[in-house]
Image 1 (spheres, one colour):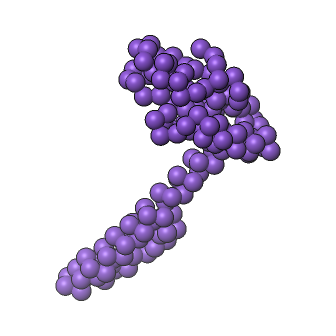
Image 2 (image 1 turned 30 degrees about the vertical axis):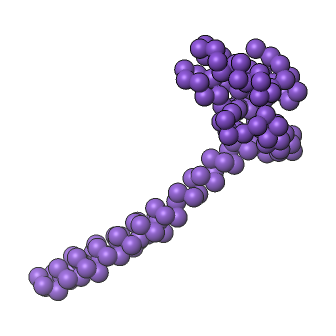
Image 3 (image 1 turned 60 degrees about the vertical axis):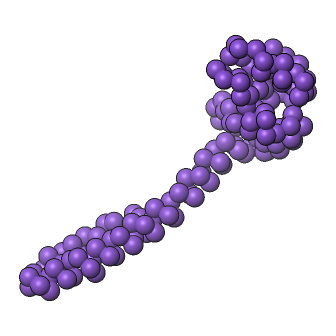
Length: 147
């Protein structure tokens, strides 16, 4: 189905039970997809500079107006035209946002393990070689990767 995406057209589109897409005639690549339920989601279709097809989600129809979705899609298309890839940039941002917390958690746990468990155990049993061996392995192999 094609037409200028408006609130009225979206409401008519969502009242239907079929899974389908509503393509915007005003901005190429912008469309609303409805699956199963009655929620519509704005998407943008584009190809990056390598020719790979992307369909990132812009947002839900009940949270964004068609004009807001068009504005976001327009910014993304400008970025694509200048050689960027907004979808890949978002993936990288999400991946980097997760890494620091993982690194901090692993680093804290490893440090506690070395100090509270291995060091105490080595002092009690007199096996300081095991402590040095484990400490060396953790510091040389795991801290390089996670910290």
